[in-house]
Amino acid sequence: MFPAEALAAELEARGRRLVLMTDRRGVAFGDVLGRIERHAIAARSPSVRGPVARAIAILGLARAVFQAVRVLRRIRPAAAVGFGGYPSVPPLVASGRLGIPSVLHEQNAVLGRANRMLARRASAIATSFPETARIPRDRVGLVTCVGNPVRAAIAALRGTPFAQPAQDGPFRLLVTGGSQGARIFAEVVPEAIAALPQALRQRIEVSQQCRPEDLADVERHYAEADVDARLAPFFDDMPARLGAAHLVICRAGASTIAELAAAGRPAILVPLPIAADDHQSANGRALVAADAAIMIAQEEFTAERLARELATLMGAPAQLARRAAAARKFARPDSAQALADLVEGLIGAQTPEQAAPQGVGGAA
Image (cartoon, rainbow, N blue to C red):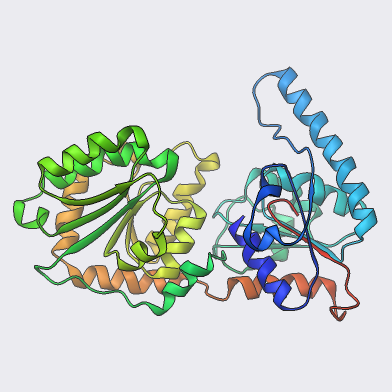
């Protein structure tokens, strides 16, 4: 929902009226999207096991298309914007049936399944990476790379320069993986740091996200290794911790890649192996190709391998600074504006007073 929120803020600033259409989870989203008119639809993913469950899901999608058509006929939007996920399918299908121009925004380096379903109906496709796989050949001419908008607090880090660590000074390590990444990092990272020579261990200051059930074990490992560690299931001050980090260990989700680039911070990426279409590996390869990150497959992410990488990077502050600069160069700080320009290009030369609402959100 972050790209949708960023686009909504930009279009609001341009005087556009917005409507959010999504499922019941997305409709509860706050901040910018919480201020605009919202409509919940009963969207379901057809990617479920079993013929009965799949039939029910397909019937649910058909019902959601009917719901979307009724809403769109009433509000008569000038354009619709979809951000992937199955909640975006009914509104975009309905938009196509009603002749409403639509834009798809793809956050990952592989066009997602929902966006692949919708690509042949789209008027334009906005990508976050210069190269995005799985785009139908006859739709390539519709593609514009606009980047992936990030939260305002992260975007503000662009003005915070990377502080190259002193050869013998503190080394601030940020470890973040969310609910699906924290377990492997809880197992590997403390063991890797404990394996480092004492002179390196004493320099490390760790901020690490951990699942609640892992907190005690991880805290004990760091205490035994005499490592300064701050552990929590969630950090309220994540932008500040990212801005202070000398190195980040994390997954390779689209928002994570965009935030690393926006902040200009080097990283060790460990893609989630069960991600659909292995899109996290594709995301990570783009940052590696830019010389902004190191990527380690999860099956190769061992304490021994990580300890070697950490020892090398801690002894090469100039390499960290180079990767930080490369990450910042990879960023698209104007992505929200570029996406808004693409949407307004579909609308045409109407004034804000003349234009009908624009659909936006996790769905459209």
